[in-house]
Image (cartoon, rainbow, N blue to C red; front, side, top):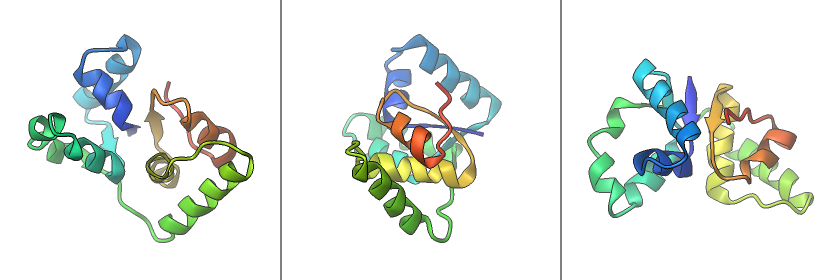
Length: 125
């Protein structure tokens, strides 16, 4: 299994960033692509992408929210903020879903590297 964040999926849909798009295309064709729940919310809230993706999204597996998820997410965000690092709520929740399931994340947003360095997130690219 491998997950993708909203920015990486957006680049894939726009046919931007060849390396990221190739990784997502491979995961999609092999059935290995999964979505953290927050990514689904972000995609569906986009006025253009939401209409287009609404029918395709149910075909991609969704990572479950495990017991203690919210507490672990808050603790990891606190760790990063204490170091003076950026930790947006949506990024924190995406990272925590991947950490909980030991799933690598395809991400273009450089802020995820902080979750990898200090919180155990595994990045795919």
